[in-house]
Image (cartoon, rainbow over all chains, first blue to last red; front, side, top):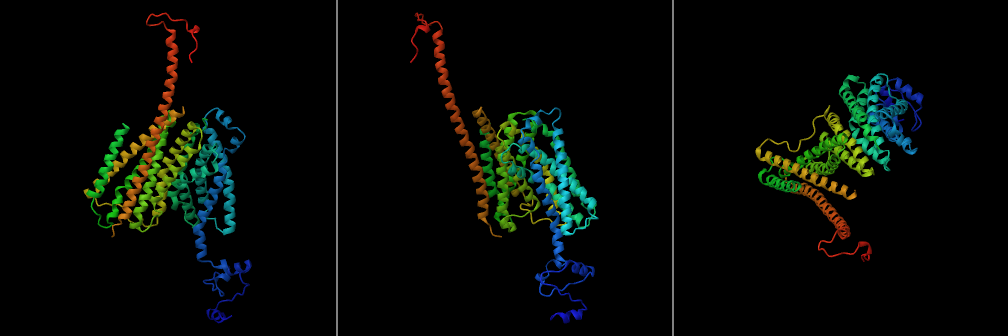
Length: 234
Length: 215
Length: 77
């Protein structure tokens, strides 16, 4: 209570709380006051995440990377298993014998992967919004574009490489080793664009990243469609 | 033919070495450590050249299915990964006394590191796919994807590193254009290119012999 | 600025070492395969040599001496 006099001088209210806890209701009430400063007596360790300043910025800096890390980890799992069904149930020859252009198989598998990843990404994003209290209102349309383009890039190459590694015993190791270096442009572009969008910038500000994502998607799709015949030859 | 290449590369490398230490002057700001510029950029240049050859040979293989094209791709990847690794190592050795650090994630270094990992992936795929014809096809596709990806890697990494950020530290080898520095560099560039051609030719011949031995 | 000759030697030396070792590996493997190929062709030639002896005995004798029928002759040891 030695600081009470100081509080009186500053005209500030004093809040007494249990060590290491601040009730949510109280926290919201404090925030609603929009305080210019909060003086924690007893040290910051007694207060924890109540501080609104630098921690939030640190979080905002790390968030896009962590988000896309979540996307790519789930992507690695999902994409790597694209042809597992055919492999396990001896249907690989069935794929080879399918009439017509084999690129239809590629596009079909790709569509399936995209649907799967869309579901996972929506879930992850929802969890992020809830746990980190992110305001998506302004960023949402731009975010949808960036996530869609990035996911298409991941899935386009991932489906192709999954077919190539389906037969290999060390598939679980080889698939990420092949995919991740190739995906560096997509990941960099997606993370930087997401960062800007979450910081409140319009989509136009990250036009160069969006164009890179689009170009990458076109290249990967073209190669996938053109070369899948060669993959499914034997 | 291969033997001529061998003698030619030996001669060119010898000449390059003499020029790097005899003709090239002691550089003003960096001192003699700048002489690493006569090996590092040539190694890096060949690293990219080898990758281009892998891509071209891969396309040729997918189009015409000539086993020679596949052997060229394989050999170029093997020699290429060596040159890339050496480029990174010599760059790092050069960086320590001049930049003060063994490594930094600036645009060019990051690109070369990614190139290196892509090479490794290619060779890994080669090694793990058991059927040789299938390995040839799969590696051809990988070679094409990786090569088309490199420009995208360059742009993305460059923008990542330089947008809203000042350009990175002094580039090793920003030479003033004096002939005494230019000629040793050009000679070594050519010498390492000939060495690359010689090693690839030998490796292709070895691959053909190995294939015949197994037939 | 100090000359850092150690770094220069390291860079040049490493390059020479790695490329030299690779080249030596290629040369050795090629020699191995050459030896293996020669060994195989030698055994192939020996087998072919036995075949030509059998062929020659079926043709009419060049010197004009009469020869008994091949079937009546005792088999080669």
